[in-house]
Image 1 (cartoon, one colour):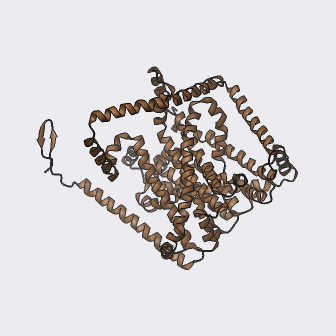
Image 2 (cartoon, one colour):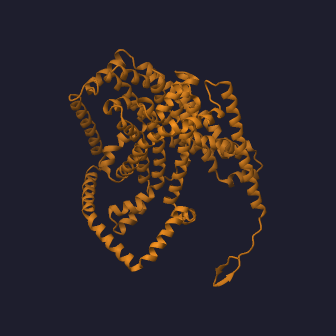
Length: 590
């Protein structure tokens, strides 16, 4: 029998009988599993019925299972490895460069002044709009695929890291300064650890965006990878292997989400490391190796080797530390010089003027079929807007598509999120599918949605809804889960009905989360509008970009791109300015 030591005495642990509460927990768990299994069975039956009646629009689960046997190893896995190779390199570049840039923007004012407007523009810009430029710049090769993935993923990481590092409590920095901690020490011990939650959120966002970039660029301009495979299967109406690829991408996203969550807990909650990692086989193996090494080496020899190695490494890195410290002091002094608001705007205007001047100079060195001059773009902007009015109809069409898709995503997402957060059975039935579709790059459904809906407005609305609705659902559900249970118990003690509790307690407490989800859906809907127009039709601003690029009217192609940039920045600015005012009680004291 196992024993334990308590106050110096050896006592036997008591034998614990299962309590009523434990039995209730097991009963609830059994019910949860039954509800999940029942929902899976129902979905599979409906899928089989629809696939059997409409074989040219939807494949049945039985056909998908047969396709796994015939297509997984010879075609799907090799294409997946090609996409994974490109994605891994691009995502590593996003993380390695995105986190330092975000920290530098938060800590060094001159870098923030120089980069913040352009980071905001590219983060809110549908990157698919600049694909023609990337194709002309890099050609159709692996460099193009990596560049597209980086542009899709890096700005989410930069933005979240910058936001997190900017929100670190200033009191902690004051304490660090009072102990004469250097800027590097404060960065590594206060700013970076305090920003980890935001950094991991940015990595999750960057992962999803980079996956979209990898699939889209392979669908648009590549003959390799899963994107090209999806395009080929959809064109040949091979729907069973098409869904095999979709399921593989979904499983990959879910596995990354699980790994990301565990890594975030390990990094942000170090007190959980012992309990959460003690049972890992890899950890046990490493502990055995370490014990074997310790038996062969004395403690004094190990300590002596560690100290000598540390001294050698410190001496080798000293010039690098001195150089980085000098660069940091120079940049910090420039930031103090640019502390005035007027001076900062002068710097931003100067950067814009420098970019336009470099653009004008570069346009004389290359063909106008690749890079038109700024003067040609300005003339095309004036002609298409005020002379021929050719850009007005696509602009109104894109705005109408945006308004319809965004409104319907709120109308569908908020009630579903409320139901999933409030009723356990609804969450158990719908939760796995919401998580699966949220983690999956929605762009993989473009070919199959074109088969179902055809080209045009209906497809665009459906794609915008599918792109934005899951953000609204998840944020609303999390808002319901965050409601204080004591408020609900108080309402019940006053004999309030379920409808009364929902209207007076649940919904008001959930509104800040709904607003946060709507802000995210606001930008995602606009990105979905441009993506749907570029991929499926020649209408709207996205369609104009594709048609002008096909006709090599490069100056005209920049006009819808500039309108997209202006609208993207305007939408982000409006959401940042007015969304907090809708919930003043949630922002009190900030």
